[in-house]
Amino acid sequence: MTPDRALHPNPALHPNPDWWRDAVFYQVYIRSFADGNGDGIGDLAGIRSRLPYLADLGIDALWITPFYPSPMVDHGYDVADPRDVEPEFGNLAEFDAMVAEAHRLGLRVTIDLVPNHSSHLREWFQEALAAPPGSAARARYVFRDGRGPDGAEPPNNWPSVFGGPAWTRVPDGQWYLHLFAAEQPDLDFSNPEVLADLETTMRFWLDRGVDGFRIDVAHGMAKPAGLPDMVPAEDTGLLDDHGPGDLRFDQDGVHDVHRRIRRVLDEYPEAMAVGEVWVHDDARLALYLRADELQLAFNFRLLMAEWAPADLRSAVEHSLASVAATPAPACWVLSNHDRPRHVTRYGDGVVGTARARAAALLQLALPGAAYVYNGDELGMPDVDLPDEVLQDPVWERSGHTQRGRDACRIPMPWSGAEPPYGFSTTAGTWLPMPPGWVGLTAAAQAADPGSMLSLYRRALALRSSSPVFAGDGLQWVPTPDGCVAFRRPGGLVCLLNLSGAPVPLPEGRVLLASTDVTAGALPDDAAVWLHA
Image 1 (cartoon, rainbow, N blue to C red):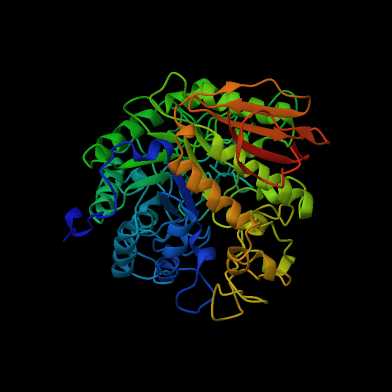
Image 2 (cartoon, rainbow, N blue to C red):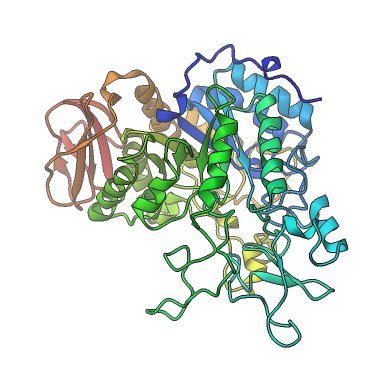
């Protein structure tokens, strides 16, 4: 029996159908956030135990990465059952308790939806392997005959995102499509049964009280008719990666799927969805944000931008331009579980940390929604792991030429002077934690008013309470060379200095700075909020 949403009321949450428009979401990479049962892997009980920390931090909502039954080939993004909980992470009762406690603390809960593909161990795919070509079971996936006289060549030249071909042959000679790992077969969304099953999954979790979804590979789920070959890019000879010639993604038919998703969301007041949409063109991104599609879409330009004034300003301008003609606000991201953490991208060490502090004020000053990856608020860097502990499928599928994403997925350091820093009661965490992180722990930073954690807490408190953050737009402000500055309609001015030397503070009352500005100047690699 599906539980009634009324069983999970939100007593601390005021009704607000547009709560997500300026919300700060906190991404919980479940394996790495907090371990509640001592096995070295994060879980639902661990999340529940740390909800007071998140409430004190000042975020508005959680995004929890997949916790569904899975063989964990891609750490949960290979879903064997989209309507249950992987025992490694807990059970449905623990999920319900976590949601209820989050709501009691005033936090909304969003979860990952993984529609493009399933696990190869999902019952549907096992049925497909046992069924003959042309069967209804195979029609749920993308099975095709091979090319060549004996069908021994893949149906087309598409590569897998994780390396190698995007096709695997089964014993009867047919091939199936997997844009990611071979253990992640793509579902065929031209099949009504597949679309209906996605709707069933959404209602299952919405009825349990979740407040929305992050849609994985939201630019997938539609394939071009005939599955033609991709044309190599002229300048490199390589196949495009999510560019205009990449036929694997951003096909027009995907919007029919998003309209169906939106119809389900509209049955639940205040429910929302954000899409992981990797497209190069502002106009293409805007299509996902039409009134009957997604409420939000990640714009990754800020995440991809170099630490340079022109790059950062261009990222902001493109992000705002992409939503200008849509009902959606912009959606800002600095780090996530798929990309190097921004402390490391910006130079690591003292320099990378100073820049990350400034970037936090830039991100949180911008109009729209913001996503903070767990550990951003502690200034966590990537960790250089030894080969033998790497787990990302990219490492194996690339023939050990690409190290994958494990470096940005190290467990959170909570307290103590040595691994596992309060993350678990066992030292054998799923990815090893390095020595020397005592000053990086949440406990150490909570006691330090100058820490990254304290900066985030003050910034989030101001963002949620001060009228200077009002209004959707921004106006660029003239600055010295090497700086970027803008003004929000409510009176907030954000100044970012990348000039290589201190610059005088503009007129106005200092609200918050990423470093000491008492001398009346903003140092290099720093940012300040003023009310002017």
